Amino acid sequence: MGINQNFCINTSGKTYPIYDVDKDGKKVGELYNRESFIEYGAEGSQVCIKFLGPDGVFKSAIIDTWQHPFNYSWCTDKPYGTAVISGKKYYTFKMRKSKSVYKADASKWGTVAAGCLVATTNADVGSSHNDWKEINYVQHTSGEWVKVNGAGYEHGYVDTGIASASGYTTIPFYGSW
Image (tube, rainbow, N blue to C red; front, side):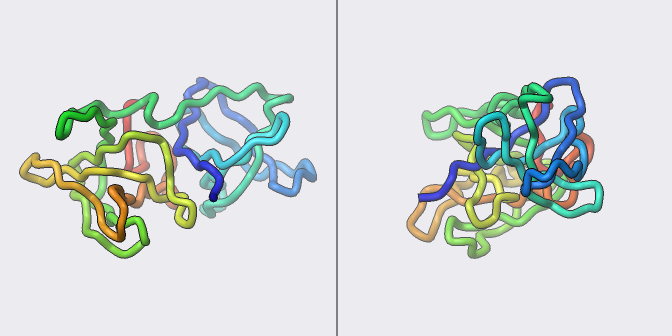
């Protein structure tokens, strides 16, 4: 069983210092207001995250919430909108760029077009590819919802683009943050 990993956004209005995962106190970057990141654990006052560092590398780091109280939101708190598909409510997110969509086993399923939406019920990301967001549907350019499934699962993943762009004006996977 893996660790729950969630797609999150710094919605605090503040910039937070980010430290290396070895806890030696070395600052490795900052997490800006409205910037996306992946939360993958916490211990005591330390929240473990993956973020896009100033060197352009998507890396593991720590936010010390004792020194810097940290407020953030899961992506499902700030969706682009919602949709009822087959009688069930989903959170939707807009894709600013065409991105690959994968089955749960990481094999390619297809592509979601720029300007179209993806739909999900949760904030989960992939355990092996934590820059991929778990999704259930992709909106076709015609507006029709297409179920993403295969490999024995009722969900798939979309590449969020967070490994190369995490700011609210640049990330391909976007909500209302």
